[in-house]
Length: 256
Length: 73
Image: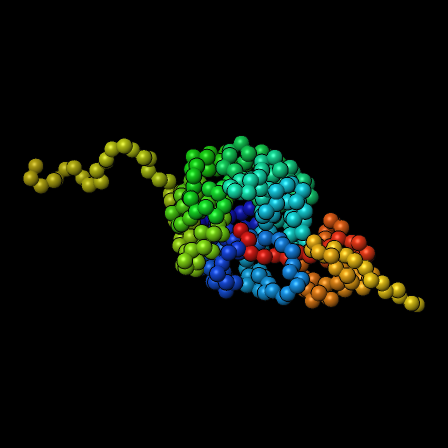
């Protein structure tokens, strides 16, 4: 199975995993290992200067796993741009998972802010991976603005609802000039497989693994689902039909 | 040469702090026992390159943000 290539960088795994909400840092590390991922997202937040806290980075082998800083919880293009610049300096890479959120309850993206921030950051030399609506027109605009990949949501962040609009994901992939990563909404392994069967180049998830009763086991399930979905997509599924087509020969049936 | 040390007020991660200054960003991070390799620093809304931590001097009234990576999706 071929590797995932984004902006000239090769990833062996098509599964991108988050680093938030795990029961512990050591469970996170074990889940990352079980998922086979080689890219994880991280958030950029103020250092707690009142007390010493354990560093997340002590639990990520950055020689094997690429860090993708996000701009989560940014509600304006300006805040997202500022956060991306800080993430670049903290992580020493120019990649960013760009989020410009438009609504607190759904965490749906703000299209205008997202496009504006994409343009600015691309101009500044960032490799921009925008988290976007499952809207083929928006995805095209983001790619035209220089996004290195587009990351349409399957469902609201953390909802676990699965791919709500499979047809849109398929259209986005058919039209895409850049890799398509389904980001957010996966609840269980079959959701990840569906995303991959639709042709997505990869899947990004956090809560589905971190929030599972056994995050490490779920991480392995997701690894297998992403691989299975990718293989099924490449294999070319049979067309859907309303009526049966017998699998066994109709000749030589006894008693006829 | 006499180096003047004065008490100054800075805004650090949103909160007001009294520190003796002027001092460099490197010196501030050292005082706070923060590993400079794992953070990013903003001085008055501009990101400061790690290579400029020694030469960037914090003055009275400056606004500083020190961030690091935490878990996220």
